[in-house]
Figure 1: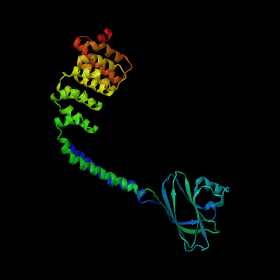
Figure 2: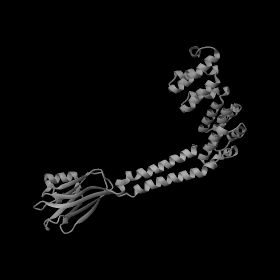
Figure 3: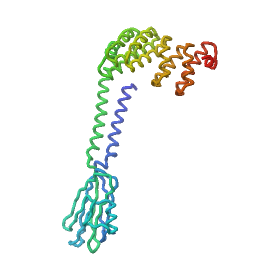
Figure 4: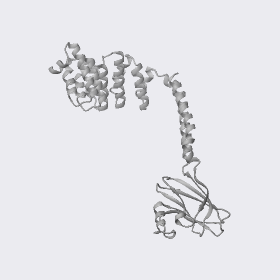
Length: 357
């Protein structure tokens, strides 16, 4: 299976998965949920009220339907409150009444001949309580239905649709443009190194590192004089990558000269990284400066690998200094490996080299 086919298969499976699981995840938002639906006998008094407490349902719309059973006395009424749990506790304790409530979202009376439907939206995370209060002189039977739905229920339809459309669109674009990307050649890649698009510059740079030839090295060296730092940085990266792949160290001195006149620190580090690729003894002084300074760990590790390839006795003191200093174990191991190569080349031991340094 090709990479393109594999990618398209993954996109298709992900789109199908989204179509399957989206309705399950969003069902409570889209269709809503019924919290209570049925007849309820409510005894007189505060302590016998029917209550339903809402906990952490921010941005939900609660719909309450109430109607009386036909056997209920026509003169009976039902008080509906939607108040805080704390205030309802005060009512139960007798310190508050219906007339001096301070914290509530809804307070009304349902009359026998007028079935009532109310909508209440919760706009915070408070603990709110629905109270169905019978202040008549006898119990009665009423029908209560309490349901909820998120006020942004439509959002949970839009999200899966947008994701699926996005995945399909990406797959189509990927399929349409794959042939254009596959037609990259040396001439096109060199031109794209100067593109305004960072993405195009990066793609061209990595393609050249894998496919560039010795003929491109001269042009890349000239690009190190470009007025734009990002182009100089990419040119150094590609020059080093091609040089390492084809085993050409002829541009080491050119890189050193560019390093001396370069002012941008990121470009200087890119040149040092390219010098690691060519691993020339003429770069040892710069390598010493960077491996002992506070630069990024990846660059210091690459310098240690370059010093291993150079395997010069001149680098022993700096390698020992790194090993004995406050550095990461990874860097110390790389420097120890470089010392082992030098020791083998000199016909001695690492311990002997470290003592003499």
